[in-house]
Length: 138
Image (cartoon, rainbow, N blue to C red; front, side, top):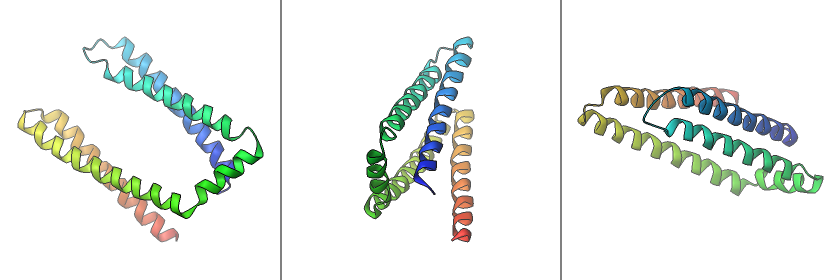
């Protein structure tokens, strides 16, 4: 994929973060709950989006910076490190979520346990479908 196209996609993903974050802030400000976590999560998404857009403008400021970042991203060592980090994050999330499901069941929080176990199943299913598609394309 062309690096400029990749940068453009990242820009729109960052805009998506901001829009989702603002939607969460607005939606959960009207819902009266004791838990303010969800609107805080929305705020965090907005901040992440703003930082990513700022980085986009820093990278695309001049041609030399674009080339430097493109070389860094296409370096095999950096690609290997990024892939290993994704694998570790995936495994840690699945293990922590599974332990959390057990703990939630012990404390009779079946609804939370069910939702969490469904997200783990969905994540693993998405992984296997993605793996199958990528394997068949290459």
